Amino acid sequence: MHLFKENRSNINRGYYSDMFDKINLKEKKFRPIKAKLIFAVVAVSSFITFIIIILSFNTQYHRDVRSLDEKIQQIKESTISSIARVVWNLDIPYLEVQAESIAKIKDLVKVSIKDPKGQVMVEKYHDHQVQDLDAIDSDKSNLRTYKFPLYHDDSANEFIGTVEIIATTINIRNEIYNRQAVLVAGEVIKTLFLSFLIILIINFYINKNIDQIIEFLKRFNPNSIETNQLNITRKSSTYDEIDILQNEINKMIQQINRLNKEKELKISEQEKKIEMQQIAAITSAKMSALGEMAGGIAHEINNPLTIIHTNTKIMEKMIDKGIINNEIFLKSSKNIIKTVERIGTIINGLKNISRDVSNEVMTKVPFKNILLEVISLCEERLKENQIEIQCNLNDPFLETQLSCYQVQLSQVLLNLFNNSFDAIRQLDSKWIRIEASKNENWFVIHFIDSGNGIPKDLREKIFQPFFTTKEIGKGTGLGLSLVYGIIKNHNGEIFYDDQFENTCFTIKLPLEG
Image (cartoon, rainbow, N blue to C red):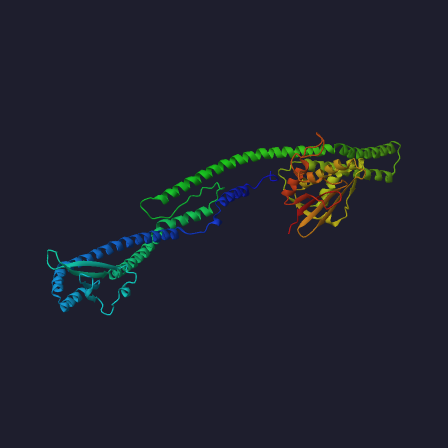
């Protein structure tokens, strides 16, 4: 029944929204897979290049240092014995020539020839303009010193001096640095080229397909029972993980569709059960309300029947006596017609209130018509209990046309009258007042009685199903719950209004346009 159906799609949408909120993507910063892979390639390539450069530098450095050591060893084998003979003969000019020839060799810095006491006999630098080792290497970390003793003969019995050769590895390092710079430049170019190729490959084989999957999943409705299949456009004679993923997603979609169909069937069956229960509850509450009014309705019908009976008897006696008085006959017939119409109004009201509303459609009707129909059912009962109905039936606001379910709105007013009757029947001051007003968007009804209001601790419970303050057996607890559901079904509002001194329920119904 449309009055009580819930919007399941909104509920499901809210459920999936809650699921995705748990992932909380807003706390993360988006980076595409391409960027992550490129960063990984660059990082790994840079790390590998760094390791290669370190290993290559150490390998080349030690190789070139060994080459320098071998060069010094050759100088020792070819020159030291000759220098020893020149030192023995004290041929200083020739000694200087030999020292200078050695000092000119690449990577050598200084050649010194000393006597047995360590005094310098000859000293030559590779660069004649540089006569200080600090100018070559201030911390001496790149300098290597080689010392070779000099003997008079091969027997090594008579020590005659020392040849000291100082070499530098600065040139070796610089040459290696230059070669490494070329290597680094080559690695950078290789990395950039490799990254570009990776982008193309990733985009062709992965990203393009992932984008299709993402677009499909964005459009996919998990609540739909229609079969929508993911179809990735690819040109390949083989299959890979993307194809497997596509198949698994389609299997999942088929399973979701199957579950949705089963869920729809179960929900439909459950809705039918709930609908039947709700109709039974409405009928029970409706019959309870009509039962409460039964005594008043009996009086409401009995009194007009008495009037009809009395007027009929008067006319019958006049006819039996042969008295023909058109004026009295006309007056009696008018009373009978008026009374029959009164009974008809009551009967129609009962029929309208009690009829099935499951297939009722919205119609436009003046609010006054609905109000008068309900008052006709309640009026006699209220009069018997000295309860005054205060309502200006000439109020133009009561003529407002409402697009509504007429029977359901009558049920709302009937329940409010019954609740007020039960609440105020034992009071000294007993009255019910209906006020109407409207603005641009709403038609507003204030239903007020002479009660002293509802306690604050009960106000939040009064619209709950089966909540009642009446004695056991005198109330179902469904009245205000049904009233609340009907008003909500009209996209309206109902609430306890504490702006009034007495008990007041305010109803707001939307106006068209």
